[in-house]
Image (tube, rainbow, N blue to C red):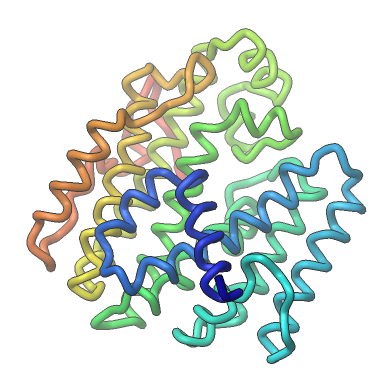
Length: 316
Protein backbone atom coordinates (compact mmCIF):
# COMPACT_ATOMS: atom_id res chain seq x y z
CA UNK A 1 0.00 0.00 0.00
CA UNK A 2 1.48 3.36 -0.99
CA UNK A 3 2.20 5.86 1.83
CA UNK A 4 -0.67 8.24 1.03
CA UNK A 5 -3.25 5.45 0.85
CA UNK A 6 -1.87 3.91 4.02
CA UNK A 7 -1.99 7.27 5.83
CA UNK A 8 -5.64 7.80 4.94
CA UNK A 9 -6.41 4.25 6.10
CA UNK A 10 -4.70 4.91 9.43
CA UNK A 11 -6.66 8.13 9.94
CA UNK A 12 -9.88 6.31 9.13
CA UNK A 13 -9.11 3.64 11.72
CA UNK A 14 -8.35 6.23 14.40
CA UNK A 15 -11.67 7.87 13.61
CA UNK A 16 -13.57 4.56 13.64
CA UNK A 17 -12.16 3.50 17.01
CA UNK A 18 -12.12 6.79 18.91
CA UNK A 19 -14.84 8.98 17.35
CA UNK A 20 -17.84 6.69 17.03
CA UNK A 21 -20.54 9.36 16.90
CA UNK A 22 -18.74 11.52 14.37
CA UNK A 23 -17.57 8.49 12.39
CA UNK A 24 -21.17 7.35 12.01
CA UNK A 25 -22.14 10.81 10.79
CA UNK A 26 -19.37 10.83 8.16
CA UNK A 27 -21.04 7.85 6.47
CA UNK A 28 -23.69 10.33 5.34
CA UNK A 29 -21.08 12.29 3.36
CA UNK A 30 -20.25 11.59 -0.28
CA UNK A 31 -17.58 8.88 -0.39
CA UNK A 32 -14.94 11.21 -1.84
CA UNK A 33 -15.21 13.61 1.13
CA UNK A 34 -14.93 11.01 3.89
CA UNK A 35 -11.16 10.36 3.73
CA UNK A 36 -10.47 14.08 4.14
CA UNK A 37 -12.64 14.26 7.26
CA UNK A 38 -10.87 11.16 8.60
CA UNK A 39 -7.53 12.87 7.94
CA UNK A 40 -8.43 15.91 10.04
CA UNK A 41 -9.74 13.69 12.81
CA UNK A 42 -6.56 11.61 12.71
CA UNK A 43 -4.41 14.71 12.99
CA UNK A 44 -6.26 16.07 16.00
CA UNK A 45 -6.53 12.67 17.67
CA UNK A 46 -2.83 11.88 17.29
CA UNK A 47 -1.80 15.22 18.79
CA UNK A 48 -4.24 14.72 21.64
CA UNK A 49 -2.83 11.23 22.26
CA UNK A 50 0.69 12.63 22.59
CA UNK A 51 -0.62 14.86 25.36
CA UNK A 52 -2.91 12.39 27.13
CA UNK A 53 -1.75 8.80 26.56
CA UNK A 54 1.89 9.41 27.49
CA UNK A 55 1.06 10.48 31.04
CA UNK A 56 3.91 8.37 32.40
CA UNK A 57 6.32 10.81 30.74
CA UNK A 58 7.27 14.15 32.27
CA UNK A 59 5.53 17.19 30.76
CA UNK A 60 8.84 18.29 29.24
CA UNK A 61 9.20 14.96 27.42
CA UNK A 62 5.64 15.09 26.14
CA UNK A 63 6.20 18.68 25.06
CA UNK A 64 9.30 17.57 23.16
CA UNK A 65 7.33 14.82 21.40
CA UNK A 66 4.56 17.23 20.46
CA UNK A 67 7.05 19.85 19.27
CA UNK A 68 8.90 17.30 17.13
CA UNK A 69 5.70 16.04 15.53
CA UNK A 70 4.46 19.60 14.99
CA UNK A 71 7.77 20.53 13.35
CA UNK A 72 7.47 17.55 11.03
CA UNK A 73 3.96 18.66 10.07
CA UNK A 74 5.06 22.27 9.47
CA UNK A 75 8.00 21.05 7.36
CA UNK A 76 5.56 19.03 5.30
CA UNK A 77 3.43 22.12 4.76
CA UNK A 78 6.54 23.83 3.43
CA UNK A 79 7.03 21.01 0.92
CA UNK A 80 9.59 18.83 2.69
CA UNK A 81 9.22 15.03 2.41
CA UNK A 82 7.55 13.57 5.52
CA UNK A 83 8.13 10.11 6.90
CA UNK A 84 5.10 9.57 9.14
CA UNK A 85 2.24 7.04 9.27
CA UNK A 86 -0.57 9.61 9.01
CA UNK A 87 0.77 13.07 8.15
CA UNK A 88 0.86 12.47 4.36
CA UNK A 89 -2.95 12.23 4.42
CA UNK A 90 -3.32 15.40 6.48
CA UNK A 91 -0.90 17.34 4.30
CA UNK A 92 -2.67 16.20 1.15
CA UNK A 93 -6.06 17.27 2.54
CA UNK A 94 -4.70 20.67 3.56
CA UNK A 95 -3.35 21.17 0.06
CA UNK A 96 -6.43 19.94 -1.79
CA UNK A 97 -8.77 22.26 0.12
CA UNK A 98 -6.33 25.07 0.87
CA UNK A 99 -7.19 24.91 4.58
CA UNK A 100 -5.98 27.88 6.59
CA UNK A 101 -2.59 27.01 8.12
CA UNK A 102 -3.28 29.39 11.02
CA UNK A 103 -5.98 27.03 12.25
CA UNK A 104 -3.37 24.30 12.71
CA UNK A 105 -1.07 26.68 14.56
CA UNK A 106 -3.91 27.57 16.93
CA UNK A 107 -4.77 23.91 17.47
CA UNK A 108 -1.21 22.93 18.30
CA UNK A 109 -0.90 25.86 20.72
CA UNK A 110 -3.93 24.61 22.63
CA UNK A 111 -2.52 21.09 22.74
CA UNK A 112 0.66 22.53 24.22
CA UNK A 113 -1.42 24.30 26.88
CA UNK A 114 -2.76 20.92 28.01
CA UNK A 115 0.75 19.96 29.09
CA UNK A 116 0.91 22.61 31.79
CA UNK A 117 -2.49 24.27 32.30
CA UNK A 118 -4.79 22.34 34.64
CA UNK A 119 -7.70 24.73 35.12
CA UNK A 120 -9.28 27.96 33.86
CA UNK A 121 -10.40 30.83 36.04
CA UNK A 122 -13.28 32.10 33.88
CA UNK A 123 -15.24 31.03 30.83
CA UNK A 124 -13.41 33.64 28.77
CA UNK A 125 -10.15 31.95 29.77
CA UNK A 126 -11.54 28.58 28.76
CA UNK A 127 -12.73 30.02 25.44
CA UNK A 128 -9.16 31.14 24.72
CA UNK A 129 -8.13 27.49 24.96
CA UNK A 130 -11.19 26.22 23.07
CA UNK A 131 -10.54 28.64 20.23
CA UNK A 132 -7.64 26.39 19.22
CA UNK A 133 -8.88 23.05 20.48
CA UNK A 134 -12.44 23.24 19.13
CA UNK A 135 -13.49 26.35 17.21
CA UNK A 136 -10.79 25.94 14.58
CA UNK A 137 -11.92 22.36 13.94
CA UNK A 138 -15.11 23.86 12.56
CA UNK A 139 -13.24 26.18 10.23
CA UNK A 140 -10.85 23.40 9.15
CA UNK A 141 -13.85 21.31 8.17
CA UNK A 142 -15.71 24.05 6.31
CA UNK A 143 -13.74 23.88 3.02
CA UNK A 144 -14.32 20.11 2.87
CA UNK A 145 -18.02 20.38 3.62
CA UNK A 146 -18.49 23.31 1.26
CA UNK A 147 -20.89 26.20 1.74
CA UNK A 148 -23.03 28.57 -0.28
CA UNK A 149 -21.66 31.40 1.89
CA UNK A 150 -18.34 30.45 3.51
CA UNK A 151 -18.02 33.81 5.25
CA UNK A 152 -21.44 33.62 6.91
CA UNK A 153 -20.97 29.92 7.73
CA UNK A 154 -17.67 30.49 9.50
CA UNK A 155 -19.17 31.74 12.78
CA UNK A 156 -21.68 28.88 13.13
CA UNK A 157 -18.93 26.38 12.26
CA UNK A 158 -16.83 27.70 15.12
CA UNK A 159 -19.84 27.59 17.44
CA UNK A 160 -20.44 23.94 16.57
CA UNK A 161 -16.86 23.09 17.49
CA UNK A 162 -17.34 24.84 20.83
CA UNK A 163 -20.66 23.07 21.42
CA UNK A 164 -19.15 19.64 20.81
CA UNK A 165 -16.16 20.22 23.04
CA UNK A 166 -18.13 21.75 25.89
CA UNK A 167 -20.41 18.70 25.71
CA UNK A 168 -17.33 16.54 26.17
CA UNK A 169 -16.11 18.63 29.09
CA UNK A 170 -19.46 18.33 30.85
CA UNK A 171 -19.76 14.59 30.29
CA UNK A 172 -16.14 13.76 31.11
CA UNK A 173 -15.53 15.73 34.31
CA UNK A 174 -14.43 12.56 36.09
CA UNK A 175 -12.05 11.44 33.35
CA UNK A 176 -10.46 14.87 33.17
CA UNK A 177 -9.98 14.90 36.94
CA UNK A 178 -8.01 11.66 36.60
CA UNK A 179 -5.68 13.53 34.24
CA UNK A 180 -5.35 16.35 36.78
CA UNK A 181 -7.48 18.80 34.79
CA UNK A 182 -10.71 20.69 35.36
CA UNK A 183 -12.28 22.26 32.27
CA UNK A 184 -15.27 23.76 34.06
CA UNK A 185 -14.37 27.36 34.92
CA UNK A 186 -13.38 27.94 38.54
CA UNK A 187 -15.67 30.98 38.62
CA UNK A 188 -18.59 28.63 37.89
CA UNK A 189 -17.55 26.28 40.69
CA UNK A 190 -17.38 29.25 43.02
CA UNK A 191 -20.86 30.37 41.93
CA UNK A 192 -22.25 27.15 43.37
CA UNK A 193 -20.00 27.05 46.43
CA UNK A 194 -17.77 24.30 45.04
CA UNK A 195 -14.06 23.57 44.84
CA UNK A 196 -11.99 21.16 42.77
CA UNK A 197 -11.75 19.00 45.89
CA UNK A 198 -15.54 18.72 45.92
CA UNK A 199 -15.52 17.44 42.34
CA UNK A 200 -12.77 14.95 43.17
CA UNK A 201 -14.73 13.65 46.15
CA UNK A 202 -17.86 13.24 44.04
CA UNK A 203 -15.88 11.40 41.38
CA UNK A 204 -14.45 9.05 44.02
CA UNK A 205 -17.94 8.39 45.40
CA UNK A 206 -19.47 8.15 41.90
CA UNK A 207 -22.24 10.45 43.04
CA UNK A 208 -22.86 14.15 42.37
CA UNK A 209 -24.05 16.34 45.21
CA UNK A 210 -26.92 18.78 44.73
CA UNK A 211 -24.59 21.79 44.15
CA UNK A 212 -22.62 19.80 41.57
CA UNK A 213 -25.83 18.87 39.74
CA UNK A 214 -26.75 22.56 39.68
CA UNK A 215 -23.30 23.35 38.27
CA UNK A 216 -23.68 20.72 35.55
CA UNK A 217 -27.17 21.98 34.69
CA UNK A 218 -25.72 25.47 34.38
CA UNK A 219 -23.03 24.24 31.97
CA UNK A 220 -25.59 22.25 29.94
CA UNK A 221 -27.54 25.46 29.33
CA UNK A 222 -24.34 27.20 28.28
CA UNK A 223 -23.57 24.40 25.82
CA UNK A 224 -27.08 24.61 24.39
CA UNK A 225 -26.49 28.28 23.60
CA UNK A 226 -23.54 27.23 21.43
CA UNK A 227 -25.71 24.64 19.68
CA UNK A 228 -28.36 27.30 19.06
CA UNK A 229 -25.75 29.65 17.58
CA UNK A 230 -24.39 26.83 15.38
CA UNK A 231 -27.77 25.74 13.98
CA UNK A 232 -28.13 28.42 11.24
CA UNK A 233 -24.88 27.27 9.63
CA UNK A 234 -26.04 23.77 8.72
CA UNK A 235 -28.49 24.82 5.96
CA UNK A 236 -25.65 26.97 4.54
CA UNK A 237 -23.55 23.86 3.81
CA UNK A 238 -23.44 22.09 0.47
CA UNK A 239 -26.51 19.89 0.13
CA UNK A 240 -24.40 16.72 0.16
CA UNK A 241 -22.82 17.69 3.51
CA UNK A 242 -25.90 18.72 5.46
CA UNK A 243 -27.07 15.26 6.55
CA UNK A 244 -23.67 14.46 8.07
CA UNK A 245 -23.41 17.60 10.16
CA UNK A 246 -27.09 17.55 11.05
CA UNK A 247 -26.62 14.01 12.39
CA UNK A 248 -23.48 14.94 14.35
CA UNK A 249 -25.30 17.97 15.73
CA UNK A 250 -28.34 15.97 16.84
CA UNK A 251 -26.50 12.96 18.25
CA UNK A 252 -23.92 15.00 20.13
CA UNK A 253 -26.63 17.31 21.42
CA UNK A 254 -28.49 14.23 22.66
CA UNK A 255 -25.61 13.59 25.08
CA UNK A 256 -26.80 16.67 26.96
CA UNK A 257 -30.29 15.19 27.04
CA UNK A 258 -28.87 11.97 28.51
CA UNK A 259 -27.13 14.04 31.19
CA UNK A 260 -30.38 15.79 31.98
CA UNK A 261 -32.20 12.47 32.23
CA UNK A 262 -29.71 11.18 34.79
CA UNK A 263 -30.40 14.27 36.91
CA UNK A 264 -27.10 15.91 35.92
CA UNK A 265 -25.06 13.29 37.79
CA UNK A 266 -22.09 12.86 35.46
CA UNK A 267 -20.28 10.70 38.01
CA UNK A 268 -22.86 7.92 38.38
CA UNK A 269 -22.30 6.76 34.80
CA UNK A 270 -20.94 8.10 31.54
CA UNK A 271 -23.72 9.66 29.48
CA UNK A 272 -23.99 7.73 26.23
CA UNK A 273 -26.59 7.95 23.48
CA UNK A 274 -27.84 4.37 22.84
CA UNK A 275 -26.69 2.89 19.54
CA UNK A 276 -30.23 2.37 18.27
CA UNK A 277 -31.03 6.02 18.91
CA UNK A 278 -27.84 7.09 17.11
CA UNK A 279 -28.74 5.00 14.08
CA UNK A 280 -32.33 6.23 13.99
CA UNK A 281 -31.13 9.83 14.26
CA UNK A 282 -28.67 9.32 11.41
CA UNK A 283 -31.40 7.79 9.25
CA UNK A 284 -33.78 10.65 10.01
CA UNK A 285 -31.12 13.22 9.15
CA UNK A 286 -30.35 11.42 5.88
CA UNK A 287 -34.04 11.65 4.97
CA UNK A 288 -34.33 15.34 5.89
CA UNK A 289 -34.64 17.66 2.92
CA UNK A 290 -31.49 19.82 2.54
CA UNK A 291 -32.00 23.43 3.48
CA UNK A 292 -34.46 22.77 6.27
CA UNK A 293 -33.77 24.67 9.51
CA UNK A 294 -32.23 22.65 12.30
CA UNK A 295 -34.35 21.97 15.35
CA UNK A 296 -32.58 23.05 18.52
CA UNK A 297 -33.75 20.70 21.29
CA UNK A 298 -33.83 22.21 24.75
CA UNK A 299 -33.09 25.68 23.42
CA UNK A 300 -32.61 27.82 26.53
CA UNK A 301 -34.53 30.95 27.27
CA UNK A 302 -32.83 34.10 28.55
CA UNK A 303 -30.22 32.48 30.86
CA UNK A 304 -30.72 35.11 33.49
CA UNK A 305 -34.29 33.81 33.95
CA UNK A 306 -33.83 30.07 33.45
CA UNK A 307 -34.59 28.00 36.58
CA UNK A 308 -32.70 24.75 37.02
CA UNK A 309 -32.64 24.35 40.77
CA UNK A 310 -32.38 28.07 41.27
CA UNK A 311 -32.44 31.12 39.02
CA UNK A 312 -29.13 31.48 37.22
CA UNK A 313 -27.81 34.98 36.89
CA UNK A 314 -25.73 36.23 33.97
CA UNK A 315 -24.79 33.00 32.22
CA UNK A 316 -22.24 34.64 29.96
